Length: 208
Picture 1: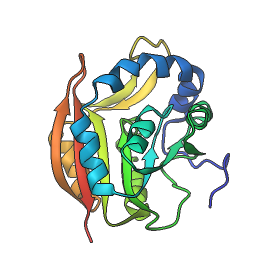
Picture 2 (picture 1 turned 90 degrees about the horizontal axis):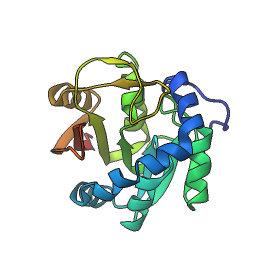
Picture 3 (picture 1 turned 60 degrees about the horizontal axis):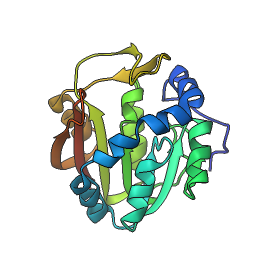
């Protein structure tokens, strides 16, 4: 198992530093988002996973808590030390690591929840993260994936924060192609627009 601190980067380093600085502010800013989040999507993922789940790019752990409330055994993973600390403060099991090299054995999880985390990887590198997610999932394991609709990739300031972070935006077709090309079958899709941004919500199953 990879030691904490021995991080192999797939998530953009500049973005990780931004989250280390903004962890508390980000947590407060996203409270309303999770209050509005579609519960059917969370319940659909929980029904597919039904067991041990890895929350890839967990942030401060708000979605991890929601998944735990649905009866899942949640392990949070984030590249930001500040975010991992906040997850632990909330009573969640949390590991500091990058999603380009997940520190778990093959087939360790019944589900992987990756909500608005893979969008912080460059499109040329996101395949590494998808391969790692597939590797740590059991056969027919569940994937809950959330991306932001759009085109292109760039550093940008967002959500009122003046520190740029890396964002890769996806069309629905582009996102579905990414999922299928890395060994998953999409089982459901929906979109979520709490404000100006449209979120693409996919549930998928690892093919045997």
